[in-house]
Structure formats: C-alpha cells, structure tokens
Length: 139
Image 1 (cartoon, helix red, strand yellow):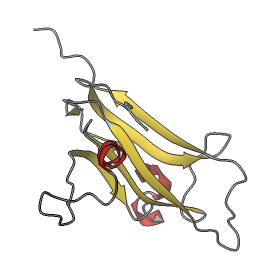
Image 2 (cartoon, one colour):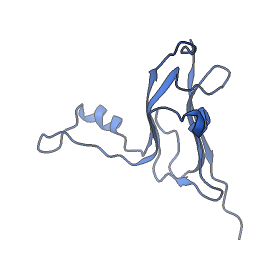
Image 3 (cartoon, one colour):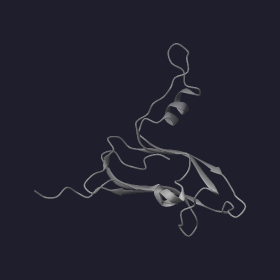
C-alpha cells in the first residue's frame, strides 16, 4: 500500500491491525501479523517491480535491501500481560513524533492462525491509522 503517510508529515501515534466489520481489533489467534513495515518512499517492492526478483548486486550476488523503516512490527501481537491487541496502537510521549522525510508505504503479511475457540472471521479488514503530531506551540 503506497503513500499512506505523506512526505513531511509528523506521526504521533499509529494503529496497524486486522479489524472486524465492527472495527474491533483481531488478535492472534485467529489472525497473526507475520510482519508489518512502514517504509520510506524507496520501497523494496518498487525495486522488485522494476528489476525483478531476487535483487542482485553488480557482482551477481543477492542484494540485501535495507529501506528506511519508520515503524515495524513482527511476530504477532502482544500477549495479554503486555496489553493484548491494544499494543498494536503505538504512540510517542507527548511532544514527540516521527517526521517522514519521504512518503511512506506499508508492506505486510498476515497469517491465518485459527484456534478451537477462535476462528478467522469470514470478513475482516486491515486498519492503518496515523495520528498527526499537533502543530508547534506559538512562541
């Protein structure tokens, strides 16, 4: 998903999570977040589209791409002791944020991980919410 945060924007908080039709966060199980990356404008997917896969360096060796990651989450949501799915909502302390010098894209992979009592909803969405930093106080 491209251009989810515009260049020059400052983000004070974000929510990156699967949600039900009613907007409730969906945890693991039944849906695991293998990874979600908020990347700078120069994304690996743009290079893969342009150059093919796998990416190789000038010597023909596999190229290890390191984009500018502004936010990344791996390995599913937090356990109940660490806030459960609510931990998918991240925020900076008051007065702080992350300024994006380039437009940001999102790369993600979800995994169905049903359990006996928790089945994957028949319909769900991926929610990305970014809260802008408040404007600086007037001097």
